[in-house]
Length: 251
Image (cartoon, rainbow, N blue to C red; front, side, top):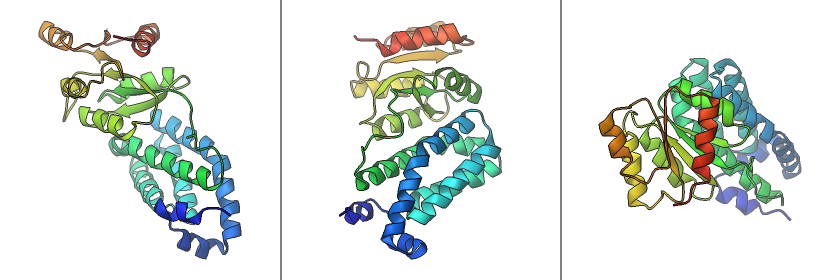
């Protein structure tokens, strides 16, 4: 017998879901259908977000919202609704700022559902993860387009988001960080200080992507054990070279 308590312990409103669907048997069938299609849906959501295609993004997150309501995924349904409303208003800033936490909740739910179903608890991707921190949508979009086939790209628009991604994904295989120096709220140097305090330079190697070529900034940056620095603008060959160097770095 399946462990219903597992669903309830993870915040899934099973009672409401069964009221809608009519029986646990139909709930289990619906959940199986959800699991069969969720990887493709999350891939589409990520692709539309990376290309700033808010019209199709809204359609996909609306679908995830509807599925989540039927299955009692209350938090995921609410987050999907927020992203749906933001994308319909073309609020790309909101979508980017809250995308990582949205995807983490989706992956959490998928993991719980797979465990309940007696399936592997693997998440929707086995690719290594790469953090890309830059407040430019163009830079992040360019990097995602070039590297998303090889890496799960975790995006941040400021230093605070970088730190949150690292702290919220301790079980994820994060193999490197591409870090802009000049970002709002908390800049790249705040992240480097966080790295130093938490001995992260070997755990998640970091290289800089920056348009700040002032001698003072460069000298200050290389006081930290970073791997290398990539100056903007850069091309695909430059990018792939520094990523390979970063992810294979050992101090």
